[in-house]
Structures are given as C-alpha cells and as structure tokens.
Image 1: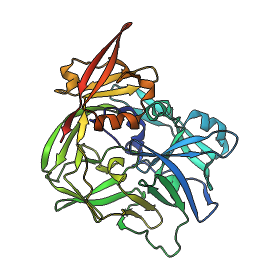
Image 2 (image 1 turned 90 degrees about the vertical axis):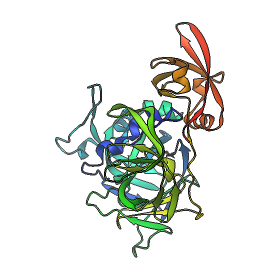
Image 3 (image 1 turned 90 degrees about the horizontal axis):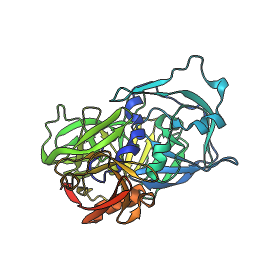
Image 4 (image 1 turned 180 degrees about the horizontal axis):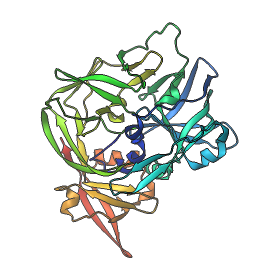
Length: 396
C-alpha cells in the first residue's frame, strides 16, 4: 500500500498499487502452471518512482508492461488483455467479483477472469487467475502504457529476485537442496505465503509486509511500538488509494531501523493504522530474493554501510495526472503552495515552462529533490498564471 507527501505525484499511481493492501488477506491466487525455458530467466526492468516495470511480448501483440507488486495477492490486467487471452472455460462457476468501497461511497467492481498465459521472457505462466482493472491512471502516471500488476502468488513456483540496483528481475527454478540466496534471510512462515517479515526499531521487533507495489520507505502502525520521533509526524500530501483519498502523516524516527543485517538510521516513515510495510523507497537499496517454497525473503547489498534516507521535500502539492494538465487534489497546510493560495481543483498546465506532458514521475521527483523552487503555470478559464513555489524540507 502506499501514501506520500513530498514530490506530490506519487498519489494516483499508488491508487492502484495498493492492491496489496486491499487483497492480501484473501485466499491467494496462483497460476495453473509455470514453465521456465531455462534455469534462470533475466528480465531487464525500468525503475520508475521506486517501482520495477518489466516489458513482455509473446505474440504479434504488445509489448506489454507489468508492475511487480509483492504486496498484492492478486494479479490485475486491463480489459484488453482479459479479452485477448481470456480462458472462459477455466473460470470456476460463480467466481466472485471484488467490490471496493471508496471513502466517498462509490463502489468499484473488479470482475475475475483467467488468462490462458502470461509470458515474461522464457517464463510462461498458464491459466492465470486475474482481476480486470482499468490501468489508464497508472499509464499516465508512469509515462508508459501499463497493462497489468503482477501479484506475489504468480511466482509461487519460482524463486523471484528483484534486483533494484541493476534494474532487473530474475526468475529461477527452486533449488532442490533449498540453499538460500546470498544475504540476510528472513522467514515469512504463514499459511497464505504472504511476505511478512520481522524487522526491528531500536529494541522492538515487529512484522512488516515487503511491498514492492508501494513507493514509500517505511509505513508503520505505531500501536505497541512506543516510537520516538526526531521530526514530526506532520500532515503531508493527499494519497490516492483504491479505497479513496487520505491525508498522509509523515515524520523521521529518532531510532534505527534494522532489516536483516542492514541498519537504516533515523528512517523517514508514514504513520498508518493498517499493516506496517516496507516499500520501494527502501527496497530499492537491495537485491531481494523471494523463495515461497521455503518461506523466506533474502535481503542482499553490495556494501555493509548503513542506508541514509534523504529528506522529504515538497512544494505542498498533490496531483492527479492526465496528458493536458495535472489537477491539484491536495495542498499541505503551511506549505509554500498553501501560502500561494493554491486550492484543490486548480489545473497545472506547465512546470518550469514545459507542458506537463513532458514530465514523467521520475523527472518530476528529481526536480523536487534538487530544485530550490519550481514554477507552476495554472489555467484559470482561458488565462494562464505562473507561480514560483519554494521546495522545502517537510521531513528534514
């Protein structure tokens, strides 16, 4: 699941990736069959806003682009893929739809389907249970057409490695001798084979979901943990989720987070009232191997140095993104955007003089990290008005 308050954009893309949060408690889906054409299948990946995206093409259609979401118990695909590769005969009679209730009372229905196949390089998954979802918002957010979100159970019969530093995904056949991958291995012993692992803050150990579908660093439920904060938590950006928008609460802890044998001093966190999770903002520092047969996750890094997380920087704006304009959906109280009297519903057409269509997630995030100020051009009727907003540290 995901949230966010700095580079405002993370909002609507998490709207979908939160799949893991709404569905991981349900009975996990799994493909009807898995075939690897070689012992090891290596897939180049894009790393966009802390999320890995793989490209696949197995016939005259495509290429297709899929997000990797270990926090999801479901694989989601567009209606286009469901219609093209659907196997109606494989769908159990009375297979239930998934209904989601948003915060404004609206209901979204995700119908079930079964795909005859999904092929990732030389890896082939047959009779894959899926939910049908409109991925157009994700496509606009990432700047690349997104055709689906691959959930954790899809890889039940493989050893899955997310190699963030080298921007690749590796699929292997399980080792018959059960040898763990290099690094620090953590067990996730639970009947649903959800990647829930023990991590530690100071002397307190708790369980967190390894959620590659979230762009956050650490989302934490503080109940029973007696957390100490060096900064915050304070009200942050507006976060879009499948269950509606919410306001983020972010801060920096005073203590050290420990994942396996890696220390993360004073991590930035989002405070939530749901399951704690490790998101892509911290997973990106690791090569992570998931072995569902032996119920373990292995974290590996090329250095023993602690991970130092940067400050969270904001102008105070959260957006819903489309090609011609970005709509403001939230303004952080007390931020430069608030001082400039920007309001939800305002439309941004240009950033630093360039049309918003030229700004993908990664480029906009870099601008937030590096710039002292950003010029936003707002559309008021037929008139454009520019405002220069300072970029400030919300979480130092």
